[in-house]
Image 1 (tube, one colour):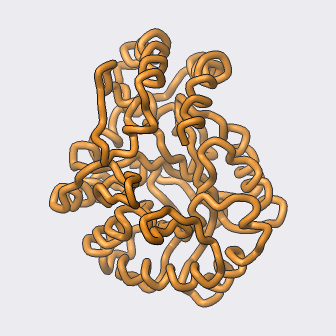
Image 2 (tube, rainbow, N blue to C red):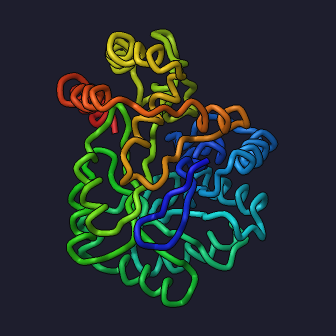
Length: 330
């Protein structure tokens, strides 16, 4: 495992982190799935342990993942370990069966206490506003809360998990006002909307967490044109048949042949593309099993510049319509 600095924070993180959304299980808010289907806690614990064995020291979760269950599992398994970096998020709530976004100062100050308890820690290494938008930042309450928690020693650093499809306004606001220490953003072979933010992060000393590196599993090569998802899996409404067909056409024709060239797996190629950008501090694939821990930390290769450039050009020429279709589904 290689390690990178997280911006100017002084935190040294594994270049592959542990995305802990899926281990939260198949939580529902009303009729809306907010998880990845059923999860077995014993399998999840084995995944955490295997990840530690592979050198992973960065674990990313949220209080909304499994409605707290993901944090509880990490707290149970990582209790007392000072050699790991834990990041969590705040801002999504379940109120009477409806998903509510709450970035008020009052709520954040309450929510952090619950996260600390579930994580069994005295301080959160990196606390993130979960997809807060510009209007929330301009209101100022959430920023006041983060700064207060930092001064109280309850969080070490804070930042923002950016919007999947429109990440730039909030990042620019934090950069302009010198706020926060990092951004979490979607960046992968398919969705490269956040690419311009990489240089902005480097210039401002921000750490970068690249999430969804495998685009809900599309980039693992495990999906075919008949793949379906259960009703308690959020992908059931995010990856419809048209999106799946169009994505597989591009992958089969333009991207998978590179796996043979570099003698690596499809996951290895997808991860190698993201890690080829030094501005990225860590990449957080979802890890549900011990096998995922191995798959997501194996097969990294150094891409030739011509191939990396081609993969970037594909976003402009072929992937954008697919990404826009994903955006329309939410």
